[in-house]
Structure formats: C-alpha cells, structure tokens
Length: 190
Picture 1: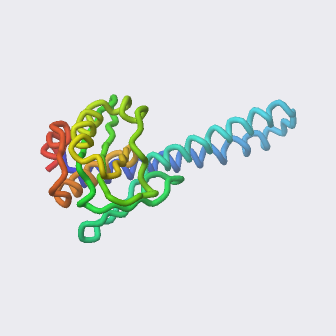
Picture 2 (picture 1 turned 90 degrees about the vertical axis):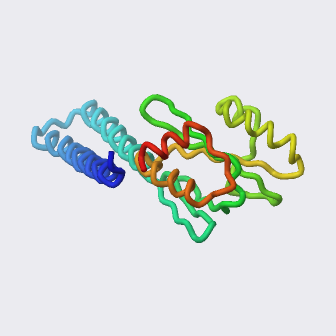
C-alpha cells in the first residue's frame, strides 16, 4: 500500500468527519428553535449532546496530530493537541519497538543519555509491565551501563503518520536496536 495515498485518505476522512460533526452541531439547535419548543428538558438534553459532539471532535483531532522534524540527527516532534514538544538526538535512541493492539499500534522508544531530559519519561516498573519486550531489552542494557539515565517514549497518536516517523527514525538512528516487529513494519511500507 502506498503511504502517501493512505495519509491522503486519512486526511480526507478526517475532514469529512469534521464537516459532518459541525453540521450536526449547528443543525440540532436550529431544529429546536424552528419547532418553537422551549421546554427546559430539551435544552438540557441538547446541551449534553453538544458537549458530547465537541468532546468527540477534540478527541479525534488529538488522535490525528503527529508532527515531527529531523534536523541532522535531532528530532523535534509533537503528538496530540495537549502534549508538549519533545526533542531528542539520534545518538540517544537505543531501542525501538512496535506494539500492536488491535488495529492501532504504538512505537516504544528507549533512550540512554548522561544528562537529565525533562521532555521524556523515566522508566518505571509500571511502564515496564505495559511494555514487556522493551523491558527485557532495558534490563539487559541497564546491567551493562548503569551510569546512564534511561527514558522511554510511547508514540500512540498520528495513525498513518507513524509509519513515516518510524521510517525516518530507521533511516536516521543507526545505533539503535530495532525489534523484529518494527523491522517487519518498515519493510511492509517501503
């Protein structure tokens, strides 16, 4: 499957979703006004439906956003509406894994650095329970180099844009170890 076509189709589906939701958002109050029905229960019900529509649109926008930029070995990325911008160097990436969960899949990255990074999350026991394959690699590398700080990042937004990001990481970060699932996914889309 061609990645650019898939991203264009995803974008057109997203725009169609936004048009339909905005049409529904505007249509419901106008219908209630034209019916000249001013019962308080209908207006409360309408307000609840409008809140559900707005929250659905915000959630979908949050799911769609993944932007990244590669500046000669330094990545700057942002995923979602409310997440901060994240930057990391390619030399710091030691492990990249892909975890599948239904139709969606997540990219799990482990970083090794000698300095503190406020944009990435520290590796904890609860994080390692969620990502067991990454945990096994982390324990191996932590035994050999305990003096480093280790962080992880889970990329779970962006839908088809994650394929491009994974391909960019694969072509830029040469020192990282890639799991078999990650390599198979890269081969599938190249």
